[in-house]
Length: 242
Image 1 (spheres, rainbow, N blue to C red):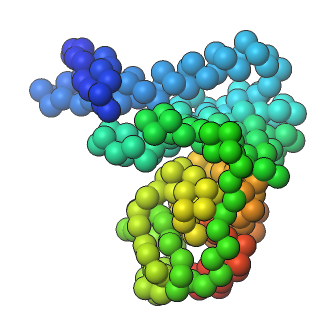
Image 2 (spheres, helix red, strand yellow; image 1 turned 90 degrees about the vertical axis):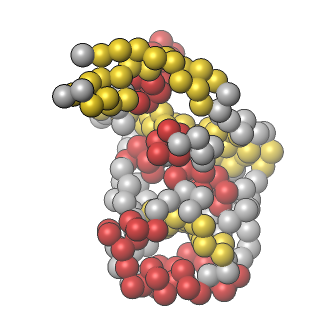
């Protein structure tokens, strides 16, 4: 059994479906945003670049061996979105021969659009750079979920690192990387990731002069966990988390 209602987020009203299982209601958030947004992005890509491949969180891969492949995460930070926290965003990346060459972070509520090509990163058309912070004691360290640090990585090492930092906040998901690239934070830690979470971040962070890698300092894409930081801090963070 299903029914349709309308709900509001951030002053806007959306239609959604509610599914009932044994009289228990479940909201279909995919219907609300994720799947609809990805369908729209795929339609635009098919029309403009019919030979390109697509990898998406919601609908999987098509023609993923193509020279150019788009990687889509329509809502990165779903938990923030559904609880009215404007720290989610849309991630769009372009791969060339399997590596990210263009990345986009779009935060529609705050009207922020960050674009990076590995050499330059802009926020709403203005070039941005990572900070020059060189000591963990002076650093603002971000992560999406503190519990995941212990769940997926070396919990005691993470605790020691966070205890050294000047400021620790969970301004996470894609917005944490936007803050790092714009010079408002120094370190972003994500202990568990998917390809569509990572691809757009690589050219954005590199274009802002930052360093992004997997958890041990290896290639950031593809990877299952990410450390991004200012150039002077990155090696220190890798060492501290071993």
